[in-house]
Image: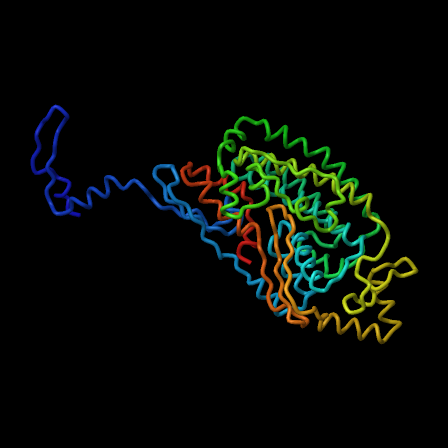
Length: 438
C-alpha cells in the first residue's frame, strides 16, 4: 500500500475533533487493518501444555478465544490395523501401548472382548488380580493428570509431588508384572503368570503410603486460593453438552451424572466391591480435579478389598485350546507358572512342547462373530469392538478411546474464555494422544 493512502488530502476541525479525508485506492484495505482485531495462533504441536503431540488452532480477539479446533494425527501408529496381522494373544502387546498412562485397562478391555467371543470363563484369581492391577493403574493415571496439570498452570510443587507418588505406582506395577509400563500381563483367558511371592505385603504397604500422602494434595492445592481461581468457572461444560459430545469419565461426572461403568454395567465382579462414585455439579476444571482426588481414595478401598478376596487357584482358563501347557495346572512342587515350571513341562513331554510351539507361533482360533465390551478407564468409557472370521487373527479391531471422544469437548470448554484458560481446560480433559491417534 502506498504511503499516500495514509496521508490526508485535506482536513477540517469540528466539535468532535479533526476529520480527515483519505486519498488513494486502498481505503478498503485500511478499513480491514483497522477493524480486523482477530489473530490465529497455533498452540503446538509441541509436547508441553498439550498432553502429547497435539496442535490447537486458536482464533483470538485480544486474549479471548473466539474459535478453537484441535488437529490430531501427529502420533499415529496404526495399532488397530496392526492387530489384524497378529494373533489374538499378540494383540495385547499392541493395545497396551495406546493409552500408555493406563495400559492395564487396554489389556483388560481387549481380553474381555476376546473372552466374550471364546465364551471363556476366567478363573476367579485372575479376575480379582485384574481389578487389583486396574485400580493401582487408575491411581497412577490420575496422579499424572494432577502432576502435568500443576506443571502447566505453574504449580510446580504439585508436579513434583504427583510424579513422586506415581513413581511408587510404577515400582509396584513392576514388582507385580515385571514391567513399569506396557505390561502385556493380562492375556486372553487370564494372566501371563501368577502374582509374585510377597505381592500382598507390597500392595498393603502401597495402600498405607498413599493414605498418608493423598491428604497432602488437599493441603497443597485444594484450598490454595491461586489454584482455585485458575480452575473455578473455567472449562465449563454442563451435562447436556457432555451427552451431546459423548464425553464420559470425570468430565461427565463433574456435570452431575454418576455414570461409571463399574456400577452401571459391572464387569470383572465390580458389583461385589464396596465403593462410591464421586460426583460434582460445578462442571468446571476445579470439579474435575476434586473428582480425581476423590477417585484415588475410592481406588484404595477397592485395592484393599481385592487383596482380601484373593484366593489360591489358577490364573488361566484350564482349556487346552487356549492355555499354554505350563498354565494348565499349578505345579505340585510350588513353582506355579514360573519359568522353571515351563522348562520342567517342556523337558518332560514332547506333546506339550509341540502344543506350546503351535500356540505361540500360530495362536488359537476364535469362533466367528463380533463382540463389544466397555470398561471404565481413568478417562471414561473404553470400548473394544472385535470381529472374528473363525481364524487365529482378528478381522477387525476398533477401539472407542475416551481421549479421542473427550477431546471433542475442547472447543466448547475454551471458546469465549481467555487463551490462558485453554491450558486449564485441556489439562482437565486429560487426553492421551497415543489413544487419540491409535
